[in-house]
Image (cartoon, rainbow, N blue to C red; front, side, top):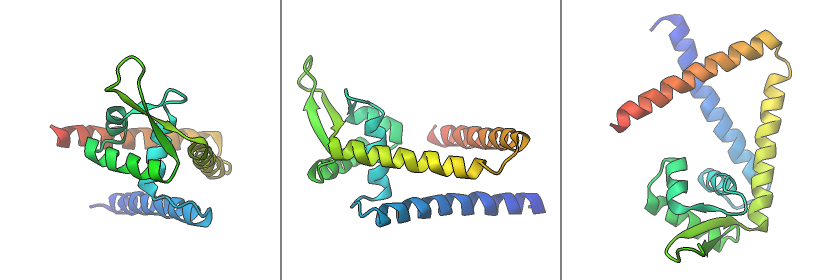
Length: 152
């Protein structure tokens, strides 16, 4: 690998790890008894608004198996952050909805991300912001394509 590739690899790996550590420490400091995966599950449920989301739509969104989502949701039900509601039209279809505490946690998590992005970008010029957006967009497209290839 050339010097750029080595530095880019190190930066991507370090950024990924650091963001996860920051999220983990934020959770610990807030005294919320959740793992990162549970936090992201709450975030995915929150995307469904007041109607909620089905287990299968959560599995697709989070790219994890139905049994894994079911286990995670059941833990969140026990912790009081989500509830399951049968769909009125079809009793076999179950929707997962955030409870009041789940909505508060989701809002705090969204605020954390908004604040993080604001702080990262506040010292950048417009051209640096555009370059960063372009680079991250291309990197994300590469990883999505790679993921699609691996899933085939």
